[in-house]
Image (spheres, rainbow, N blue to C red):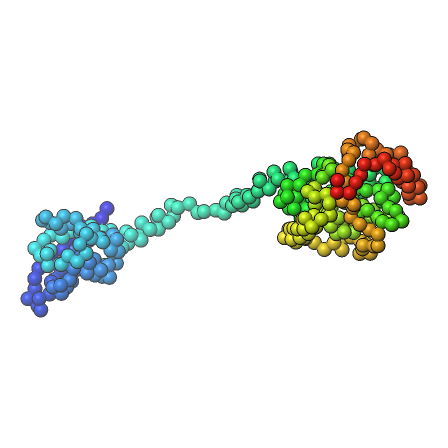
Length: 338
């Protein structure tokens, strides 16, 4: 409980000072203030002399003035207004304050390091982007099962379909392709030319020449990806006119930019890096967008026809392909830019 100290303020004949006599815990203290001193000066002097913080000081003034508490409603109230008043200081002793602080500190439980780590904000997922990627993509990936190592061809096609640049461009232009498959080199090679890719019926199917002519390896990834950019442009334009080439260039640029933005890596460490692969005379992307017929998985297409050639060597494959071309000559409804 706070103790009561009695203050008596009276005028003194010495230079007009105000003398304060303090009775505090049985002790008598006398202080002198100049006549212009305020209640705030009184609180400061008590703190410096008796070590009682101002925040713990309360003055009961009688009669009339009542309880005055720091920081005071009128901090400039002159001490002369307290003449002939009874002043009671309600405040604990410094020793009591110290004991109270120690008890309070001891009562507080020590904070232990929480075994639960702070939650890491979840990485925001772009649901619109995810939805677009599921819509504007390749419906089916199909390697040719009758050619050697079809699983490697599937990995090549999968890598193309998941290429960050290809995905970004397909989203932008809203391209959807039913089937992404590989091309049998023997069926698209003549003495005059080698076809690198085909787009059937504006995105029904895209065929890419993944393999070397000798079936002993795969073409370079960047060359095949550039071919794919060309074939995607045939989703819009059949003819190789200015509109087509402008779109092809735009797709190639988008693919390159988005690939690097996604942290593109050096192809020298990749499975389908072929530094010796470069364009040769007679190679061309295609003869324009091809229309006519229908590309049906399991129907009369290259996939089904090729099943009968499973196990044949390169020479046999090329011979059978030449025979098939002769049979189809004049009956195939393929036409450039149709």
